Image 1 (spheres, one colour):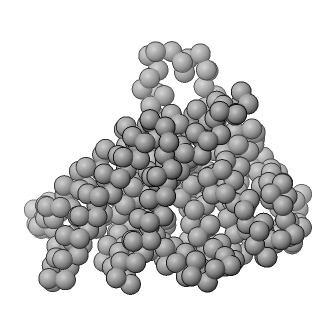
Image 2: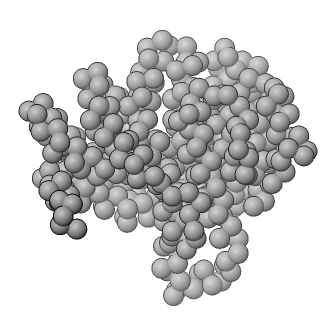
Image 3: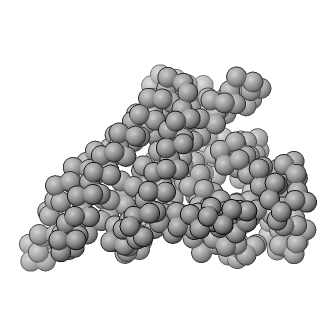
Length: 368
């Protein structure tokens, strides 16, 4: 896969338009950087996707020796992911969130590169034909999965960055708590999404998610993380998301924000109900559907990532150059797909969780 304008646009958009990584230069740790120098580092890392990062030329290893200087966690996470997605086993850089972010980032980038390759070998006239709507839908599904996963992992790395370098001690503490709360979702959803993207493209997945690990993450999330510190992590998540709900300014983004807000409200009510039953001693019954709760929360987190991207694209669009305009309209169309086609599917999760359905729990080995 040869890196091109699409790769550069995607990474710069996610880092600087959505996450506002450029503002990190105001922190003492990165005072020797400018917004342009950070973008130059991203461009250097992007070249790792050209297939030239093997041990033979030493380019990637030279970066790890310090030639990029002190760089924000979120950018190093991208560099590690690109290096590993290119087939390397080791990571270039030590990062605070490497155990959480390195694997999901590499798998997400590999799936996203396969998605971009599928586009590059598809005739545009054929793709625009009316009878290809189903194929376009499968490509949209792959795009929404991969680019939400990329946004999720970068967001997790940005929280890790805040725990490391934010000048406000209270902000460092709340970022740590929010990251701890979201960890099971961040460890699972991007991997699941990458697998789903591969299926949509008709390809053999590079990695099949481990059901046992998914089950562990689900039970850890619903059984512990949601309730830790009087559910402060959940409260911080809702507060952070509220800012982006309020930032929606167009008819489309406001409607998407409303859809996400309504889903959140229903999820909070379900969570409160589950919490009461956990306190009453119904732990086995509540956790029987923990996987559905993890799925529900992952899709809401993905919806947040798409609302953030849609809001950022809306701000950029009025002054965009022709090439960037197509990229930004693609972001808005992908957000539309997610909110029209994907988010409504969590209604089943909400019903199963609200009813505490015991169909799976009640099954017995002899009945198979």
